[in-house]
Length: 104
Image 1 (cartoon, rainbow, N blue to C red):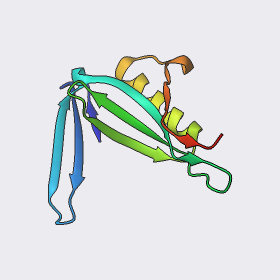
Image 2 (cartoon, rainbow, N blue to C red; image 1 turned 90 degrees about the vertical axis):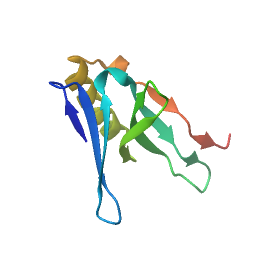
Image 3 (spheres, rainbow, N blue to C red; image 1 turned 60 degrees about the vertical axis):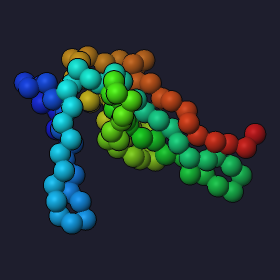
């Protein structure tokens, strides 16, 4: 993943199982949000809570940057990206969307 502020582009490079390189290029202006999404299940015998840092684009697509079981690590990565792109970030700017399930 490359954030190029000079050319205002976001480049995601992937290598397929056939060793072919795929590059997806998007404009930094197309980014509408950088969020942390809480996923998984919290139950009596099952605990699979994990967090994803995702970048949402205007066209409805998203790119996953990180997947981790640590909320602190997810917040740190999100803070770093937002600070780099926008110049400043506060703890209140780190939005965590709860998409997990649980048994009450």
